[in-house]
Image (cartoon, rainbow, N blue to C red; front, side, top):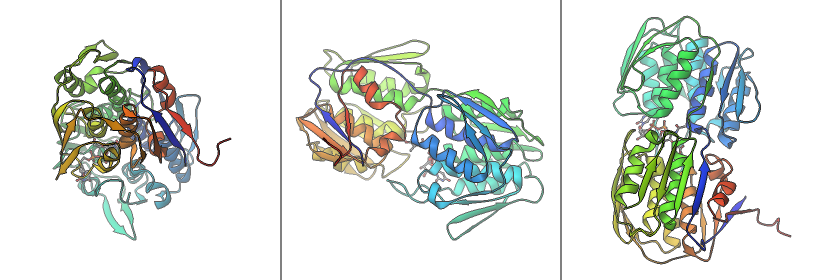
Length: 424
Ligand code: EPZ
């Protein structure tokens, strides 16, 4: 398995990075292609492992996947095997997004439950309850969800008790082909949902309430193949901006939307960084700044995103004083703390709240990535840990950060990928 070698930086990061398309937006739109018979196109697609995994799921269903650099062409005319197997779904939870489109379009499907992930239970009960509200008959047997409906789904009203990106994605897609009106209340507000709404409307869906917590869908009998450009990846942008704060340098991220990370930019301001933005860029300048500790709580969009909780925690290790991070989305998304402690981090975790005693010297060690966003946090910490840090299992990072080493090099950091046993 590949490792990263991350030497401590000899000088603060200083540079510019172009942000790739948002993985989590592409995954939803790839599933949406199943709602129509024909060739759907998606552009600004990052070259990431998750795109390959979702392509494999669609191929098993019978689709043909093609496309040039950073784009996908999904031909669903061969879709006839209405199943997503455990072997694939267990490797990537978003494979579960095929459930809504398949039952809405074909009236039946069998999709493996996602199973666990690096942190806590990640239930799908709201996905299932939402589809039942549209008339689907849902049973769970032997680790698989079987969903059927007589004829078309029927429009209905569903209130999400918690804001759920995935459940909103699945139920919204199903509602576009249901008979009659569906009302989704307390729908997620993440930009990836707007991206999906735009794509679905381009396919011929009738959706009102874009950007609000109430989506009203007038179902249609048929949708046409879609075509759309993917929004930039707000989590990638925030991760690289953390590099400016942790090394007291300056990072500019381009080809992104600063509105998507407004809460994140506010935290950098609270830390004392100089933050500037334009229509499609943002810059954090921490040069010569006395960074101040902060207290942050993760929230659904537009709040501070849970996906940047780990990268921020690493950043706060460089900030003298006591900072606090509470993750209200996932109470146990803290597997990175044990690894950061191997670098000398002073972090206490009580329940879903971590207290970081920052500003203490860190030293390199061998550490291990546990999930996608934690792996970015470990690289950030390695930039300021004295010596060269070795990070195992960086296949996690390859799921969500395109051309990572090259982008870090553009900022002045040397992150080297090695394959143990292949030296020489
Ligand atoms: C999406 O996951 C993202 N994944 C995650 O990013 C992200 O961390 C998460 O949203 C929160 O923003 C993709 O978009 C592919 P949720 P998702 O449903 O949809 C509870 C990454 O690093 N819940 O919004 O699975 C759940 O337990 C990944 O790119 C239920 O109770 O998250 C959590 O507390 C990691 N029942 C809250 O809702 C359900 O049926 C939010 O989860 C579904 C969710």
